Length: 57
Image 1 (cartoon, rainbow, N blue to C red):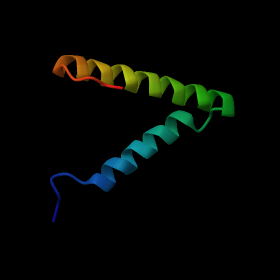
Image 2 (spheres, one colour):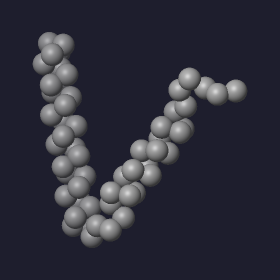
Image 3 (tube, one colour):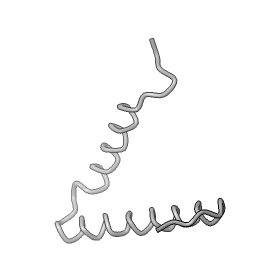
Image 4 (cartoon, rainbow, N blue to C red):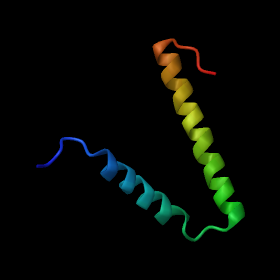
């Protein structure tokens, strides 16, 4: 039976994408990668909060 949404498949796909993007990076580059991702996530979270008029810490 095929599920409409498979959480484990989604997680595995995300892990494969991250691995492909980061497998060649040095420790310093990997740290910079995660800092960029964290900043991008924070910006998108703030944009959603602003559009829904919610306060985000």
